[in-house]
Length: 348
Ligand SMILES: NC(=O)c1ccc[n+]([C@@H]2O[C@H](COP(=O)([O-])OP(=O)(O)OC[C@H]3O[C@@H](n4cnc5c(N)ncnc54)[C@H](O)[C@@H]3O)[C@@H](O)[C@H]2O)c1
Image (cartoon, rainbow, N blue to C red; front, side, top):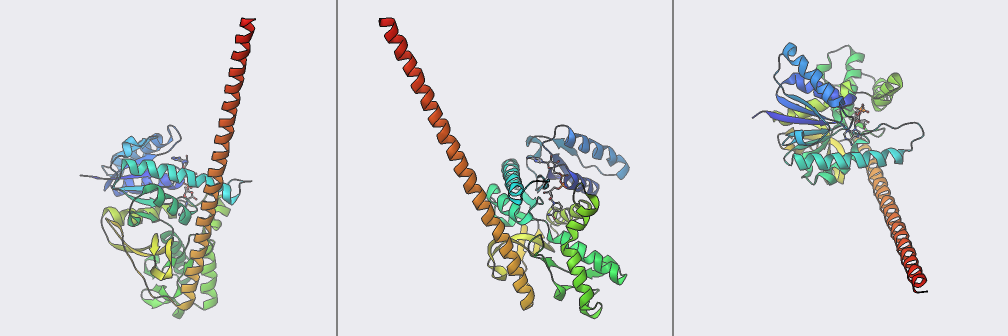
C-alpha cells in the first residue's frame, strides 16, 4: 500500500514541504490548513504538475482531519509568527494552543504515525506535541538541527570553495541563539576543519549560523525561511518512510543522554521507520558538553514558561467559571424574587 504523509499548515513551510514530497512520488500527501480553500487550491496546483513531473502521488487539500486518516507521517508546521506588539509569552501561548489542538486531532486520525514538529519555538512545541500526542517519545521528533547544520555546512563550503556535499558537521542543542555547532565533528572530506580554517574565521561562521534564521527574516521582512526548512523536513520524512536509518541531528526527548533528562534537545539520532531508533551519544569536548547543557537549560526555561502560562490560563478559566456561576445564581434569585412578588400581588 502507498505511504501517506500529512502536512498540517499549508503556509510557506507546509506548502514547500508538500511540493518537495510530491516530487518524491513515494507517498500520497494531505495538506491541511484552517484557511478555507487555500490547502485545496495548493494541492490541486501540485497535482496538476504531476503529469509534467512524472509522479503518481495523490495530493489532497483539506480543512478537516478525515482525509488525513492513517497517515504514516504527520508534519506539524501550523502556527503564527510573532507580530509587532506581541510578547514572547503571547506567541508561546498562541502556538502552544495551536500545536496542542492539531497534534491531538492528527494523532486521533493516525494513531500509528510518526510526528515531526516544525512550529516554533521548536523545542517547546516538541514538548507540547509529545504531551498532546500521547505517543512514545521516539515517534514525536523535532526538526531544527538538520536546518541549522545545513546553514553551517553551506557557509563552510562557500568559504572553502568546495562542494557542500563534502562538508560534514553537526549543530546540536536548542533551535535558537544557544545552538551548539560542533567544531570537533566538522570535517571536509574527512579533513578536520581546524586544518582548513583559522579559528577566528570558523567562529565568524558559527556566529552567522546562530543568526541564520534572523538573517533571512531581515531580508524577507514579511516571513521567515522556508526553502531550507522544508528540505530539512523532507530529509527526515525520507529517512522514516524509506526506513533509511540515517544519522541526523533532530530534537529528541532525552532520558539521561549527555547528562540531560526529560527535555527535547537537538542531538544526533538514528532515524528509521520507527522514528528515533537510537540517540547517538557521541563524545563531546568539555566545552561542547557544557554548551549543550546550557542550551538544554534554555529549553527548560521555555518549558517552565509554558507551565506558568498553563497555570495562569487555568486560574483565569476557573475565575471566569466562578463569575458565571455567581451571575447565574443572581439571575435565579432575581427570578424567584419576581415570582414571589407576583404571587403576593395576585393574593392581594
Ligand atoms: N523548526 C525550524 O527550524 C523552523 C524553520 C522555519 C519555520 N519554522 C516555524 O514553522 C512554522 C510555520 O512557518 P511558515 O513560514 O510556514 O508560516 P506561515 O504563516 O506561512 O504558515 C503557517 C500556517 O499555519 C496555519 N495554521 C494556523 N493555525 C492552524 C490550525 N489550528 N490548524 C491548521 N493550520 C493552522 C496558517 O493558516 C498558515 O497557513 C512557524 O512556527 C515557523 O516559526 C520552524
